[in-house]
Amino acid sequence: MSNRLINWYRFASPQAFYPLAGRMIPWFWVLAAVFGVIGLYIGFLVAPTDAQQGEGYRIIFLHVPASWMSMFIYVVMAFWAGLGLAFNFRLSGMMAQALAPTGALFAFLSLWTGALWGKPMWGTWWVWDARLTSELILLFLYVGFIALRSAIDDPRRADNASAVLALVGVVNVPIIYFSVKWWNTLHQGSSVSLTKSPSMATTMLWGMLFCALACWMYAIAVALMRVRTIMLERERNTEWVRAEIARGEAAEA
Amino acid sequence: MDWMYWNSFAEFIAMGTHGVYVWGSFIVMAVAMVAEPLLIVKGHRQLLARLRRQFRAEKSERGRATVRQTQNRLGVPSTPGTPSNSESKA
Image: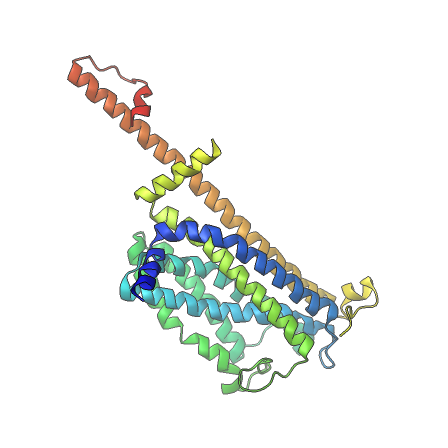
């Protein structure tokens, strides 16, 4: 037990996490590629057409994973931010900082693919309905988080201030998720539910799950890549970064 | 489950009447998900280069300082712009 705890704390230091992340990144890329190929193959080549929506429904193989990731990444980001606020781990703020741009990207992609789905299906790119509006607020929360961070020079103070924003904003995630139940929205109810069997054909469901897994692996890979850059930048006055840079130089020489 | 739903490539591209919307979603998402890691790699390389320059500069400054100290101790008049050959010592 104590042994395991020590190991975890070891990896919680940037010095130990930097090389570990470097070794993990290629594996997440491989998984993202494999899941992505399977998911897109099923979604775009195998899955039959949707009786009501025609071929345009295939956008959901992109839209649903992007939307899930935008919400999930926010929760993970808020988790790291909260951990940093509570325990002052050096790694926490860096993880939150690394996740924000990817989360913002997925929020944007969710809105973009949603608009391109909405035009043929609803006849409009955008409506101010609860689901769409709360997702837009999520994008603004990400942008606000990034802007707040970059406005504060001292990284530890930036960690704390942005952590408060992230934690306050986390209430928005259940609002997005349950918006289609709580309000009468134009957006359809969830296609996949934990409580009842999914309302879509099995093939489509598999396609969507593989696409979601691909996005998940992608997000981990990208966040790990970004956190390594952030670590070097923020820890540049420490001995381990000097040693790391020297090692890199020696390897190239 | 058939291995392929489409009868022709043209049909696949057309996506019924929804080609613009489907491919408009697909292309933007694909471009974004390729661009993001490339930008991160670029940023990482730039940071590595910057840190290398910085550390090298600091090292040679330290080296020069050592030369000056030695010269002072030995009573050698300091020469401005002493080459930092003693860098290897540091």
